[in-house]
Structures are given as C-alpha cells and as structure tokens.
Image (cartoon, rainbow, N blue to C red; front, side, top):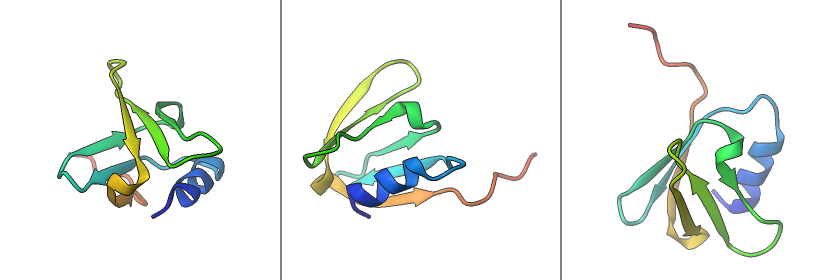
Length: 75
C-alpha cells in the first residue's frame, strides 16, 4: 500500500482502524484518523499513539497495511 492509498482511505467514510506493519517487525495501530498525519507532499508521515507519543516514519519502512473490515467479535 502506498501513502496515496492511505490518504484515500483517510478521506473515505466511515474510517476503519488500520495497522501499519514495518519492515523492522514493529507495528502501529491507528484507531482514529486524528492519530495519523500524512502531509500532501513527501514520503514520510506521523503516527501518534493514544498516550501522545509520536513516530516519524518513511513510506519505504511500510511492509503491510491491515485495514479492519469487520468489528472484532465480542467476548
């Protein structure tokens, strides 16, 4: 997935949470569009954790984007 595809996902409604998996093996969960900032130019973006910690990432670090299409079943 490219940054353009993620931008398009952000502008479609309703927003579906996504997980960005990196080549390092780390992953970042984005529960709400306010926690993801993709500038209109360039190949970098910011992911903000719920506690306010932010991560500056480059598009070439992305390995996979998982978009949740169905809610998790209740337990």
